[in-house]
Length: 131
Image: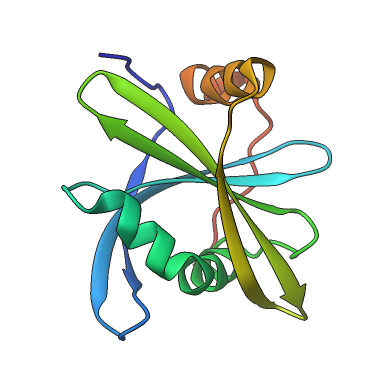
């Protein structure tokens, strides 16, 4: 099983029905982007994020005080020894994310980049966490 050095923090978010759900997140910044990595535990973890991506993005953008133009939501799906990354894209109207679209990150180069960020976060310039 792959181990990530990034400190994922368990936080509570509200789903589209207003119910609290627990997800684990970590935030990393680069010169041009703020990446929020999110992972959810449980059998229905992938559908949890898929059904609530815009609601989660709104709350996470606010939690980490990220400008919408810099915000990137990357979902880490873990099933046994399998690890898969999904990128969630949004059309932003002000601070509101609309029309969420999730796609598996299939580019080997992109996968290596994100897994390397998770494996060695101390090499990434981190932004201060607020909230």
